Length: 433
Image (cartoon, rainbow, N blue to C red; front, top):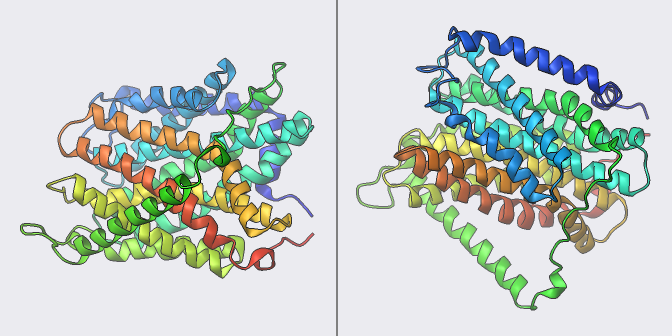
């Protein structure tokens, strides 16, 4: 079967790393020149202003969090810092250019930059873990690069394409107040996707070609080492927490639910949220050709949104009017990247002939090495933003960090795998060879 355009592009970039890295550095330098002169503005302030763009602390904290999530490696620290810095700087420059024709507030720019850092780290960790597995299986650097491109690269293309389509639809059909936020996140998602298919393979080739072996991933805690009652208790507690939060979120969306409160539907663009949920479900159906997965994606994303809104309303009082829609976008964008990667793992293990129980256990264990690090980075990003801001923004950022933890651990790693493996391998789409 002929390799896809994404695979061929990633492999070419891996074969010419110096040229690709140099082109990205030149592009960033040229793109940042207008911002340094102060001619490009984002809403009421430039992204180079220390009071805008979350003080740029996430750019410093992200590589540190990456290294904390894996054994220390100076080469890994350099690669992660370079990749995150280039993607963030490029996104900031493009946002500045777009803001000249589309009115964007500094809040939309801050949220978009935090999203792009989170997504960039997810792409990087997913590719790094696939590289480790490919090298451990005895493949050389060239073969490992092709394996990474055909797995993590295709996952990045599918998730980025799905989000681009959904955000475009939201920008077109949603309320005018939501269009700037959807446009800002759309821009950074496109930048992160292009970088993951070009810059990341080039940097990853430097890691694979290093004379020093990659440090092993930390060994995960085995379930067998825990008492038998711990796992079912944790599952029951997680599902109960999610259910209570979703019910409370539904009450807050459609009715005040408390004296002095107003329904969150007054601050939510119901048409925009529904459009995003439906398009993400349809994109999953097109990518995997499986109705069960598409329906599970739609339902779980809806439950995650309601639970997130319930937790946000409970933790932030009074709730600012901009918070619900920002939470929906900040929740669904990184969650979709994680979900596509996990679905890729589930599909691979199922088509390999594993039973449903072993498929869930094996896929989650292999995906957690990258997803756990991505979750750590995500939480660090929002905590840093919350601790460097004041007032409503601080409370919102801290609450969002907790919402993302609940969504990743319960919705994506607990509920999604068990719904996705229904029907076994006969219902997964197998490409024609």
